[in-house]
Image (cartoon, rainbow, N blue to C red):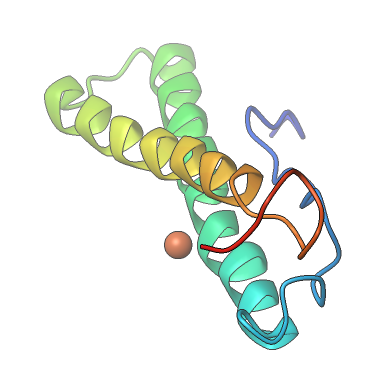
Length: 97
Ligand SMILES: [Fe+2]
């Protein structure tokens, strides 16, 4: 199997401890390394499944597969947006919420 990865987890634009005490280091790590990573893994596993089906010339339920792919890519993109919309106090032009 190729080691090709279609999606990878981007680094956060700040340290894991940067948003404390509002978001703890532990919570941010869990959310980024487990939850966001799960969308990356989910999308990549579908691309691998599609590659395998092409190589072996087998059929897939394309409607279900694409629905699942859309779910994972959506989760991936929304998490990127979420991280980019937060910043440590005093950075990125933030003020009072
Ligand atoms: Fe999340």
